Image 1 (cartoon, rainbow, N blue to C red):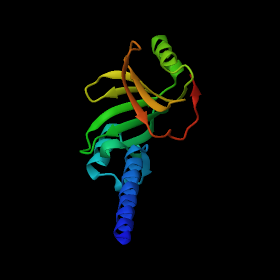
Image 2: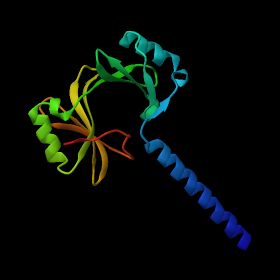
Image 3: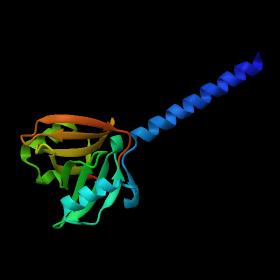
Image 4: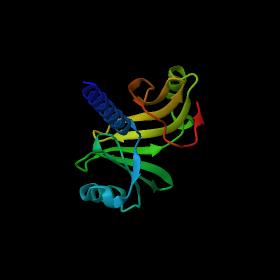
Length: 168
């Protein structure tokens, strides 16, 4: 009887550990990968859309891939879905380059936050918006704003990507 309880307890421990590891794995931010591990159709689509630029690749959520590269002196990020379809084009920016209405919305939403990343984004349906990643007392969030500064979406992240922060 004692042996059965020990086996059941060990089984719960193993299951709990596996669930925790799975949770941590699925909630971590994108990880850098070699271009050789990116699906060939994604690399081909990137080469066609970027004019053959060299990129650093990252695996994102939902088996997406992100290509980070320089284009005309600007840092760009192209996000591809698992089929290799271009989903977003992001241009690294600063909140200071955003319209005043967007800056006001960021400050109102995150009065004690620190902006880690700021992007101008165009998605596959040609919708344009601003995206910021902000670290604050409640964690790290990625927030999207329309061109007038109205919030259009928010995503909580497990951890911040390493980078220098830009104070709000």
